[in-house]
Image (cartoon, rainbow, N blue to C red; front, side, top):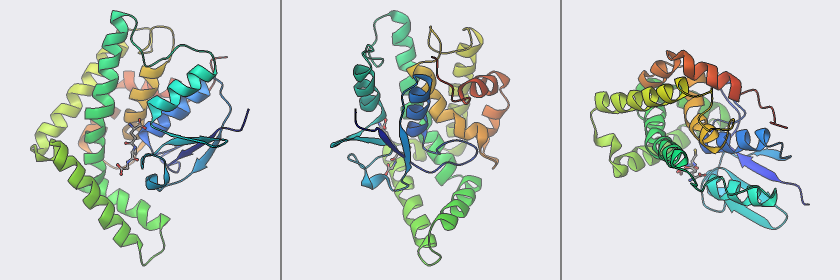
Length: 236
Ligand SMILES: N[C@@H](CCC(=O)N[C@@H](CS)C(=O)NCC(=O)O)C(=O)O
């Protein structure tokens, strides 16, 4: 079989990539013992869907973490992990979408709108780009995300509401973890764990002080789950 290449944003903050959906994919691949080569590509517009991550295998180019995982699971002879077959899986599906859709916007808001996040992103982008274009790239990027967040409605809320929403989602996650056997999925870490972890891990790791990330760091059950998931070991 042709080599699997996984295109992700660069590593950062002690994580193999700073891309939330890419982190989900890498975690799922590692835990399933699937061999791949990680290719660092910070430009999401080079991918088949204009989003990061994507994979390439021979002539195939595939975007979207769910589509990729479905494709690779089928290649391994595994059932589709994105399908719900039990009522418990319906609950996990809701949790996953809440984090991948809603929490993801809060993450972007802390990174590109909240002052401490913007300051850190500016430093990172200036370090990654040639001196003359760095400030232009940073300005274009923050404008792009601010517009997206405004269009989706979240950036129209008062900051205190955005923070409270982030904290509510983290409380729900902590509650679910505290009442399980250490994982969100019933039989050890699965798609729900990796998808939600992808959205939360950056906040647990980044150094700057932003309100939702500070709250995440204050929840020991999240930190313990993160430590288990970030080992990058395969189940086999
Ligand atoms: N549904 C996609 C979402 C991917 C996504 O939103 N990626 C972000 C980075 S985490 C991205 O490429 N953003 C660039 C943009 O929106 O222009 C997936 O599951 O892969």
